[in-house]
Image (cartoon, rainbow, N blue to C red; front, side):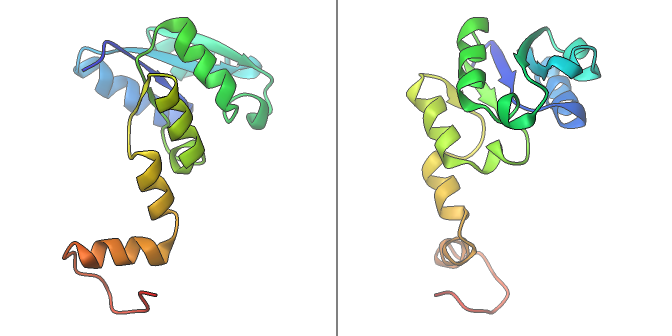
Length: 136
């Protein structure tokens, strides 16, 4: 287990992760852009780290800034929340390359499930009932 996680998301999603982590005795780091300094998720977390520019591509979706924030705060794991980073296998791979734990599926799983056809085939091969349809 780990002692501290960085939450690479904001708003209600981050608040839910913070609440669960607190119940588990895990410290949290929120990330925020320049305009979100006083947002509830930054106030609720044990620590908060500014990513700068309010444009999401330059802050909340900037993989290098998130990795750097994890290093700076000593977060051993990163929770991507939901949305773009949670679906991004490149992000999951970078987190693993930096000796951090990605909370959620591995990069390999994210890649496989990124294709509906591949995901259906995996589920079918695993015996999970699926609605009949094309598996190719």
